[in-house]
Length: 156
Length: 303
Image (tube, rainbow over all chains, first blue to last red):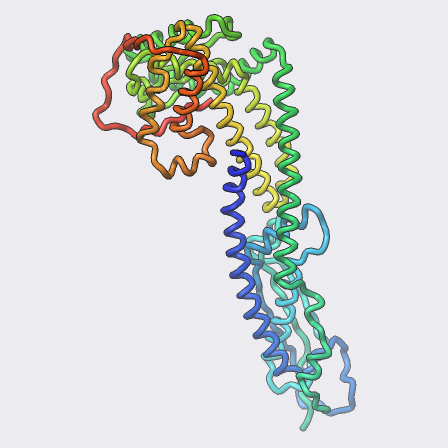
């Protein structure tokens, strides 16, 4: 009985910290997604595609390379969750939102860097682990996603 | 360019299919946490039981040779303390006195022929502990806190109990289990942390049990050696329980030792069970001057 109470004591405090981290992480993520949804709505008329040629005969006034990048870190809760998941295998839910947010944020920033563009061609997305996590194989900490492509402005 | 209603277009895309909701993540976390905790708990429990069983079966000669090997590992720190305590005449005399008490106590036990040696060390902290290699360390602080020979004998008998009940061997076996088990989890920090905490809490709980067993052993040994005289056996713990804070009593579950209050209660219970009687205390043969300021009397009687 004493041992069980001891285990509850030992695991209870870190569990509490993890739950606090979960609450903070969830609030941060929800806010970020709210911002992503809102900005995607505004920029929906600027298609970003991965084809290399313009799919119309419209005349181009100018074109240049644009890029957007962002670095997003895992919160403590997700880090622990991912670490536990890696022990038994399966869908690593913790990393999914991290990568999704990073890709969408980078794409949005790329679009925001060329206001008024009609189209972004040849979209490429690249990601890399950075920070302390880059030289440690143990866990992913922060991820950088770079989105780049060619912004095209049609002649009006 | 065809203008499209942004809301309509966004409605067609279900971007959330690529991600998990935070609720599902929490659910997933608790499932994993509970599963891993149960597996580790059962795993450690079984391995610990097996390890202790092996120790129980171990012949005494093996135990002696393991003690010898472990003693060599601790030699450096012991030599240092020996040098410190070897300087003063008073210290040598006190050490010999404590050694005499230990030799007297070990007669009639399984440890009769074991090379039990006492090291009396300079330290303000009141403490006594048993270390591999049949060595009992007693601090100056503890000796100064003793008010009678009976109290000191009780503490020495408690330490003898750790050897006789093979607590040192059992704890070493448990430590080996942890040592072999944890590197497999070193890649997964979260799981490693759970693993360490479970092992730790199982060990602290187990250690409290060992302390209680040792107290009981000491009581029986005192009864045998001093013809059923129970005088002074609870005095030291009684004094400790008076200064023990409520906080430390509340956090007893995290401690390797039971609270002094609980120890007093169990000892008193043992005294009445064994039918021991108070036949008067024997004063200490060598008196050391007590420091004026009372040091923290948070005493641990380690293995």
